[in-house]
Image (tube, rainbow, N blue to C red; front, side, top):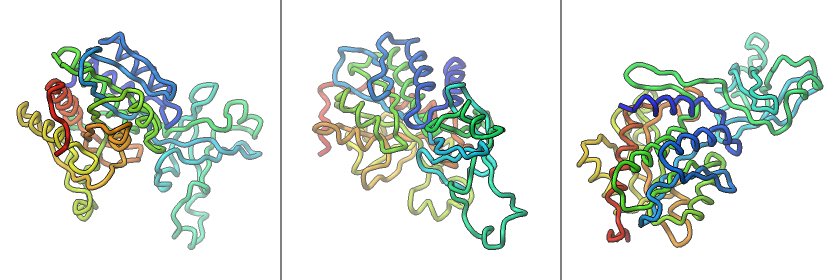
Length: 356
């Protein structure tokens, strides 16, 4: 079971506002937690948060989970004080209508709701059309444009107003499981390694701006210059209705059945083998996914940095990705950071990590 202190930290982290490019609130919390077990904590010029364990060890290993979540941004305020917005990251606009939001402004979190024309007033043709972001707006209760501008500025970030809630059977529901759970795992693996006897120098990194182009992993991997890099993200769970055919395309992954270990072009074969062997040794449940090309995760830029890194990807099964009600298992989260920590404990300079 995840220790209560760490579970409390996870809940706080999930409830922060951290859309891509605006990860500061989550970064401060993550760094404060890292300082509980290491004095070597910093934030780089891009905003990546870094915690180092066993400094001076070798080889250098990077564990990366991205701290940013998808969000929205204020684009325009009309004369009546209604706010128009664009997406930060990949949204299905059908999800947005009728949602409550938090706008992170200079005045703090401003509450609002996303409005659209009521169904009663839609024409027959309008009802057939998918909603687009341009057809939606945010109402904060402003009297007019001047009143709205007293609180809101162009470029203010927005997230849907959801807090983490615990469900049955050790599942949690929250916005931002993609990928604040990964940033949590990176830190918990480093915390665990601080109590073990690793030979490697470990860099836990909460990367930024993954949802807008894997940007934070690109810069932090260049700066850290690791020999081994393990990206932690969420993966598609396929254990819910409508996913029968999708299993043929993305594989079969179930919540509660353990972390998903990727195998393919983006993955170093030796690190893959190490993760599987470690899972078997410690009786950790695991699943495997095929990754025939570069993944859309931090593993991709990590692998390609400088002259190449022995990269891998470990994912937490996630239902309903890129919605405000993503669902993951606390058991899977715990097994993910234990798997990574135990595997890294075995890494040393004598290991030949050339893939073949």
